[in-house]
Length: 185
Image (cartoon, rainbow, N blue to C red):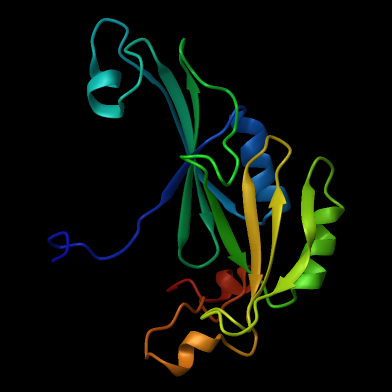
């Protein structure tokens, strides 16, 4: 079973404490492209926010949509809510989250992130080893200045699971800096 007519993931959303700071980080540091801003949205006289977004009825929000690479969109939200929890969840917390950026050179990418003010690179790139199905991949987690986790991942020679299935978790062959040369992607 699947959702009828589903074709793919359109976007993933993250709530951030400062929309402008997050947009600047996603565009200037990560190389994403701002597509649009929207809002503010609110329903001061009704319950639309509670009914449709499961937040306090008096909540308002603004958002920005960022294009990341050839086929990923990230929606960034800044909510204004009286009952808002402002502590970012850790990876181990319920609701914890991250996304991973595939890179060809994990060491160069980690070193780049180390040079960004406020970014923390957590440890060193770690090679996944057998018997793990993702053996052959190397990863390192980073944390943005506001506490959001972003993983860097590389598997230039493939991963162990590839010998057991035809399914693949491969990124597009295009790099982010060549996407303008291939507008159909």
